[in-house]
Image 1: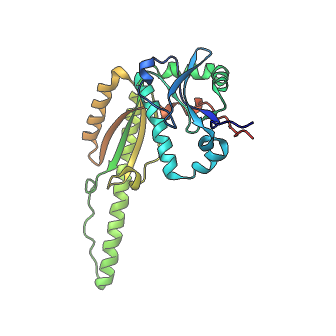
Image 2 (image 1 turned 30 degrees about the vertical axis):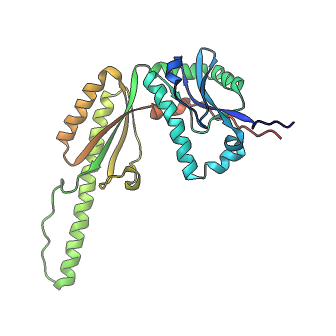
Image 3 (image 1 turned 90 degrees about the vertical axis):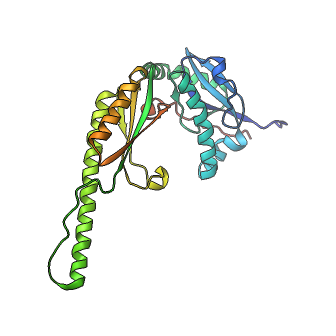
Length: 267
C-alpha cells in the first residue's frame, strides 16, 4: 500500500507520573517533531514521532555506527529528558527506544508498571549529581635525587627509574584519595555509582581523572552535599574535585529502562 507521507514510529524519551503541558511547550523531539504524552496504566510516556526512513530498525543499525549522527540524536534525546527531570522524577528511556505506535508505548507502560512506578517513587524529590576528581601534579611527595656511580648512562637510568617510581606513587596516592572521597560521599547520598574515569580526550582536563562518581541526592540536601565536597577537597589536596549537575538520573535507572521494541519498515 503506497502513501504520500513517510511511515513513522514513536521514539520514547522518558516515563513520568504526570506531565504539565507547559513542561513540553517549546521543546521538540528526536526529529524536530512535537512532543506528546502517552498515558498507560497511571504512567505517562513522553514521545515524539520518528520517521522510519531514519529511525526504523535497519536505519538505526546503520546510523548508530555514525558518530556525528549518534551525537545529534543523543543531544536531542537528552534535551527532553533533562527538561523532564527538572520538572520532577523521570525514568529516562534508553537511546533509540522506538515503538511502532502509541498503543505499543501504552502497552509497555502497563506491562512494566510496578517496576517503573517503583523507580519513580525512589527518584521523587531527588537529583543526580556528579563529582569528578583529577590528580594534582606535584601534590604528592617527591623522591630524592638518586645517587651512585656508573657514569652518565647509569645516572640517567637511575633518574628515569626514580621518576617512574614517583609517578606510580603519585597515582597510588591519588587513587587512594579518590576511593576515600567516594566512600564518604556515598555515605551521604541516597545511592551512589562509581563509573570508569573518562579519557582525557573526553574530559578535556590536562590531568588524569581518578574519580567519576554519581550520587543521588535529596533536593533539600544539596547545600550540605556541596559543602561536604568542598571539605573533602580541602582535606585531599592531591586531587581536584569538581561538582557537576544536576543531571537526569541516568546512573540510577539502568535496571528499569523500558526495552527497545524493534520497528520494521512496512513492505
